[in-house]
Image 1 (tube, protein in one colour):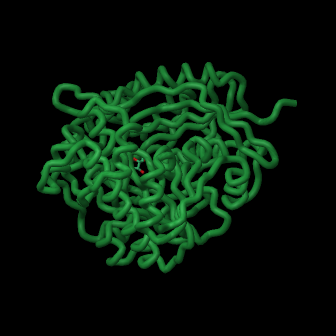
Image 2 (cartoon, rainbow, N blue to C red):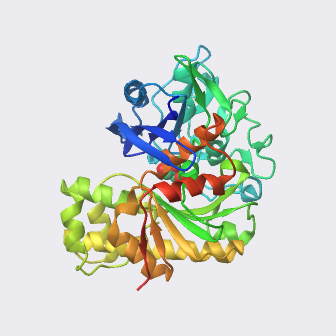
Length: 433
Ligand code: LFR
């Protein structure tokens, strides 16, 4: 019999991919079968996602994946589509970088209920600015929407649902008080590993449908004393915990308690991440590799990457120069971004430990950013801890592993799944200088 194979659909804010994953007793391998560009689209003054285009790419990817035993879907968090009473999508989903949530503020006491860091773009704040609510009969987060289009079945996958701000972190259920004004809008929860319907006879399995939840599954840690940086468009920096931290200090430090796979808490902070570089490259119409070589010996300025001024798309080098109060050559801008991200990584790793009481001995950098050698070395230097870099395709691997376990091809706890990653994926270690 052929080994168990699954298809993982991973939709990122800057690219999407479909991979075919094969899991055996001591290894997990993924092969990318389809990759496509993604990005927010300017549409009559707003920023939206071409989610129907993504659906077409997903169908093409699933065709290319061939025969599989299961399909799983993850994407970036917080964004949603609204369906009317007949199940039709009312409009292209807004992108969380759209300006409609500028100026929102959280209610007093919210953190104790949902445990989420304040981000103006969390779904609950987007809904305050949503004009289509009166016509909407259901809200589906992006992976749940794609899943619905594949299977005809609706649900809200739990890890991603926690990013809406509407889940009570103490019960793991939709909060009755926070959803009082949204009767019937939110579908029932399902959990990673649950069946989620079928596409052309192939089971669709719920995974950690929040991309960061899937990425954390595939952190190749050997014990629990690790911090992780899921480094892509965002750097998500934190630790894994059994229980949320809901203290006032934690709230003030803007740490989030997002729901992880197997009941874990992803205790982390959002750091602006490689978005800063992506937008610089777009402005310059340049490629990253030559600039990175020059940045290795360039001197940089330090800025706060989390300043909300960097959130929207647009001329990023100009915003960085304005922040630093001087003009910078492109290699100097790149160096400034990497130095500033490394310091923000360090702050988050230190704050996560201090606020949670959990000590770490290694920092795992996973995701596309794990291939950025300069960033990994600068992060090790800033943290004063070894960095283990890889796998670059952590999100797809985490998606694959949770499916594989659901169909009986992998077994055990997150530690066991991580052992498969550690054994079979290329990793690189950076010692602090
Ligand atoms: C990463 C990510 C982050 C989330 C941001 C917006 O891709 O999912 O975890 O805060 O995108 O959805």
